[in-house]
Amino acid sequence: TEEVLYCIGCGAGLQTDQPKERGYTPKSAYDKGVESGELYCQRCFKLRHYNQLEKVQMTPAEFRQILHEISEDNALIVNVIDIFDVQSTIIPALERLVGNNDIVFVANKVDLLPSDVKSSKIEAWLKKYLKDQGFKARNVFLTSAVKNKAIDDLFSFIDQHRKGRNVYIVGVSNVGKSTLINSMLRAQGFSDSVITTSQFPGTTLDLIKIPFDEASDLIDTPGILKDSQMTSLLDYKSIEQILPQKRIKPRTFQLNPGQSLFLGGMARFDYLEGDKQGVTVYLSNQVDIHRRKTEGSDEFLAKHQGDLLTPPSASEVERFPDLVGQVYTIKAPCDLVIAGLGWLSIKKPGKVAIYAPKAVDIFQRKPLI
Ligand code: GDP
Image (cartoon, rainbow, N blue to C red; front, side):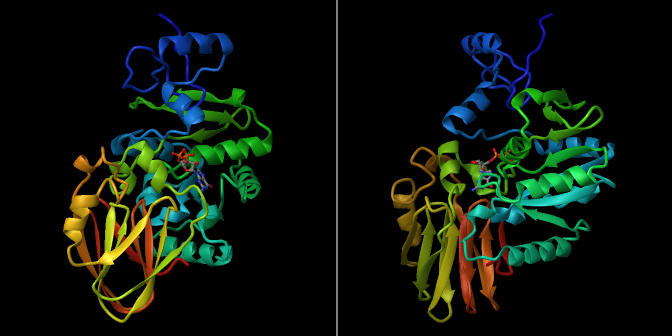
């Protein structure tokens, strides 16, 4: 039998005949890659060259299995979450699933937050949040993988605390695991060639290993795309649009009861009762916000979703779920978070509603900013 070669981007075993399966690469690209020694699967090739994201990577069952396997290793766990989407990128059962292993939390993408926000405040907020969620682990790093913030600190911490153990980077999809690992490696002067792959028993997934020394590795694990995130309802063009790439410019709208905001065509905010107030929206700058009167908004959405109100794009509208409303009574300043999309910050008491696809989680939390 022929030797299996592996993608140097994601570690998948390469194959040339099943385009829909993991590790697919067209035959011509495969042959070229063998010659040059630069073998990528089509997915990684697209990601590198066109910056396209791939959607599904692992099923929740496979993800739990991997965490379970990790629990049997004596390891240091680095859990990457997205500071822009904390609630839905946290893995509630993580501590239970990884057993007695130490966990370090890395809140990535801090570059997206407005520049006047103090890191100390965010860190305090996050620590309290993790504590309230029942996490015992207290080590928190605020990083930006693209702006190289706190990357060296994180690497030094990992290197000091791993004590000869393997280090696993875990997290749901799109939190920036790969980008973070790349920036740590770059900072350490590693090159691609050190990357090896291995497979976890019982799964079809290949993990990427980067050797620390003879006995231990830094191990990248694939993520799951949670159904509760807006991103799981969209294709990658729209995902790119809603995943903020640049620092978020908060947008404030003065609203009277009876007025609504559309966040693209994906969600709607209704101001139902209260005094006139400014509501601030934290959302990818690439998504338009449309203010109008609440009356007739259902018809307005039906008419304009996919053209004036995007994402979803015209081609995604058909399978985009209906928006379902949920009423919230606001007593103190809070954020209403729409998983995977962003949040609205509300200061004054009143009654509001959020409309979003039913599968997408909405959270009410203390103001992050
Ligand atoms: P993974 O699925 O967890 O490995 O995530 P990726 O590394 O593929 O990153 C997902 C998306 O988030 C990509 O579009 C990255 O460019 C972006 N990203 C990763 N890290 C950062 C960061 O620190 N800041 C910002 N703004 N974007 C980031």
